[in-house]
Image (cartoon, rainbow, N blue to C red; front, top):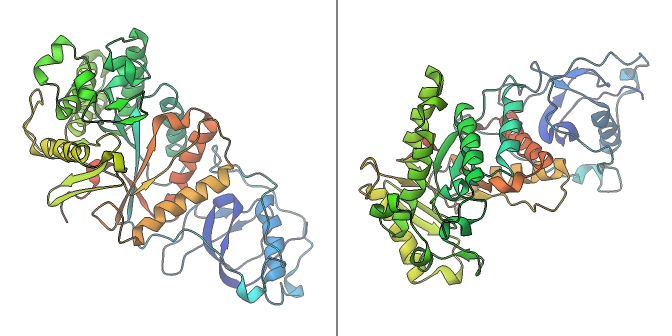
Length: 426
């Protein structure tokens, strides 16, 4: 394939790196390096401050050159042999199928070609929080931890960490019915504890997500009014109560008690990570099935179904208010327990197969769009919280997409934060 080059300043979509904006200033050939920048922003680093151009990108560029005015000047073409392919990072950021659709001149006249891509961050002060509910799940947590470990060990970017919002029922069984009826599987406890300890030692944050999830398996949705009435409570937690806020306390206590084994924390770094985990567990929470925010000066709820209105809504809001008040039976301190909702949600079908490139770009776009959405649920404009769930990532391919979404956001200049960094006050 002949090397190609042209001088242009146009936003384009690069298959190997999702969507970036480039200024092309040198010949592009397989194996060559190409500087890239966003107007007004520092250079975006893909690999050693440069972007590797692969055969897939070259094919795409051959198509792109046809729809640009005049095409490349003949004087800039070269017949030199391809350069040697440079060494690349051990972990590829994205695997792209070779049959991805290529742009061509039948799509639109050159002057009307439009390119849609996630915007670059205005500054590093624009922060994305990747939050994962309903763990630690034996079906998905291991894949997510491995994927994030790959990313953090293979990039020059600052390490990225996830907020895992944990449910006590996972220490009893994978289904909420197990904790509701106190029919626990001892093996579930060991699995959940191992995954949780690894999560903490890897530097990720944990927060609280209840004990039972208030999930009515027969109805298929959460019910704060009825589920506490039928949920059995162990004797050791009976004094904590049976209210919805008591369920939140029991879930955190179950996790706190499991982590209290000193043999789990061998080094000073381990012990510091454990201390932080316990602190964030009792400081940040997400109510199951409810996009409610309760921070200083902020009380809001969005996205409720019609079945969740009336007494059900009132109880959910009261639960958030009780947590914020901080003074709860069995809670180890009286500090506020902040309820954090979400701005964007990512759902995956466990049985479906996804195009990794398309799914990554879609999720990145959904997240980035929230920065300019004045109606978004969260109260802080420069901070976007994404919600997804542990069990969505039961196979390695889906966990790899999660990793690649994080990498893409970093390439676009966004900071990846954990919820303990979310501004509580305006």
